[in-house]
Image 1 (tube, rainbow, N blue to C red):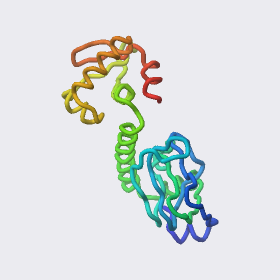
Image 2: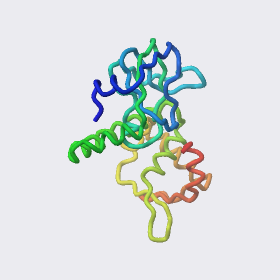
Image 3: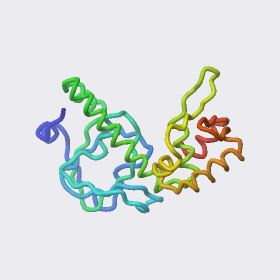
Length: 207
């Protein structure tokens, strides 16, 4: 794994002015940022404005390294709140450094990264998407394909618990599911919900 000494020795330092965008959601980056100093806001942007802020990170720290660990696009937008000094580590080089870690440590790192990613995606979803979009995304994430190639979700939790995960009231969840049935996106009213139109659900969820 990279040490700060390795980063300092091998990579050029860059100074990013306040207000400049560092990361964009859903974009895969060819590098990982190591922030040496400065403050970076994380959240959901609307154009060039940070519409919803989820948090702030202060250097020295890695910026959104979870995405690099899992080889996924960025989960959040990031903007320099102050002047930021950073170094860029190529993603391929970063991931190679992870391979040098003991297998047990790699497993723990990936488990922590997955949990962090899930929490971040949930927070972003609550801010950036309406109830129907969130519900469609949840259905797609929990769907399994049966023997006949039909995607379906087995509701193993109470609707109250599912609604809490989506940040909506149970009554809202019931209304959204009814609307999805009326639009022929899903079918079923018991514990099993069939995804009649997965592509339509993906379009609604924005994934």
